[in-house]
Image 1 (spheres, one colour):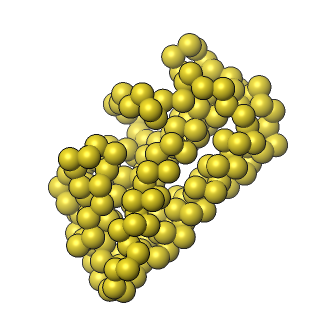
Image 2: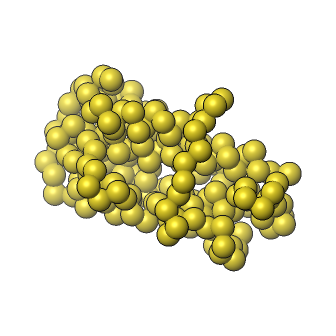
Length: 180
C-alpha cells in the first residue's frame, strides 16, 4: 500500500489526538464505572488503557531510539511493507474482529488499577507518541526499521506507527464498549 507521507502523518496525529481527548473525558467518570466488566473474561475501560500503557513503554522508546540521530529526509511517499501493512490493518476495529491473545506481561486483568494513575500515564504516553509522530514527518518512514515486541520481526517505521496507533484505536473502541 502506498501512502502520501503527509496524509499518513496527519491521519496518525488525528487518531492519537482523539485517543488523548477520550482519556481526558474519562477523568470525570467514577472509578467504579471505569472498572466495570461485563463478564469475568472481558476487560474494563481501565484494563484496556493499562494494556496500551504497557505497550507504549516499549514502542515509544523503540521509535524514539530509532529516529534519534537519523538525518532529516522528507519522502513524499511511504510504501508499506506486505507484513507491516497486514498487521496494521488487522489492528483496526471492524465488525468481525479476530480476537487476539495478549502476552501475559501486557495483560492487565489481574492488576489493581487506579483511575488517576492509568489515565495520567495513558495521556502522557499518547502525548509523547504524538510528538514522535510529528518528528517522523521529517524521517524516512521506509528505510528506518523498528523492532516489535515479537523480537524476530522488524517493520518499516511507517508501518510501526500505523500498527501501534491502530492497536490503540482497537482498544479505545473496546474501552468504549466496556462502559456502563
